[in-house]
Length: 306
Image (tube, rainbow, N blue to C red; front, side, top):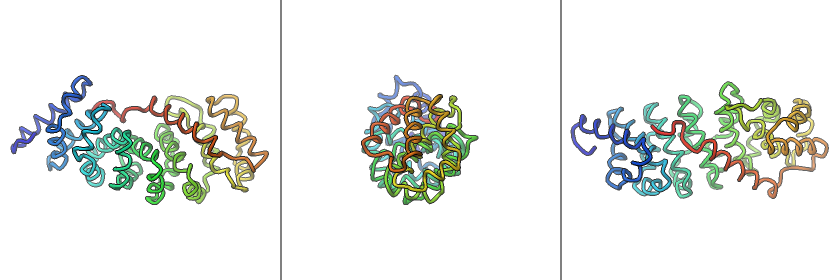
């Protein structure tokens, strides 16, 4: 990979990518020299070399033990550069790497400081489907850190996320986008920004989506957001009622997930008494549960090996 000849680089990095697809090879391949060589090739003018290098790094980063080595080798600034200006295929793999590396707590902080959020939002909004899925998962991981929530808000995430949440032809993406919105709306400034979008009718419409492989948890996520928005919002009851929330919530109590039924029941209580809301003692266990379910269902990038 360090050869001055492109044909050598192409052959070596293609082999590294192929070998890294197998779990048994990932620990041994993740040496300081190999990781440094891969990172150097992120800047290659040869698109195939660049793409293979990033894809190999994604595969290595799937292993928990490798994440720290990759970050310490200085991969993050180069990944973010690819997110900003790489070709579409390279950006898709870079977004996957951002997701797998952001699982580590130290990476969440570093990626926030290094301004990874704006290019991830741009990819989420305008990128090809695979890249959007990976960007959504990366943003979810970053949103778990309190300091990144304000960065998401300041970067204009709320309008992007909310608009995508209404794209019901992409239910898998909608679910991930809603999970990011739930995290951002857990802070007052996030709720304030979301309320500017007049979100209640759109969120009520999401309650009627029936669960399937792509729509799992969408009504539950929408109900959670409605609970956040009901807090100290005296117009919530009338807006939600006019949007048809009561009938949909009653239906959800009978057919939803366990958490979804709990949220629907509480929303029905709030429709009777607007002084109720989702407080901190109720919120935190739920979000922790959401996080674990997300990890179980989406614990890999858009493709498990690249």
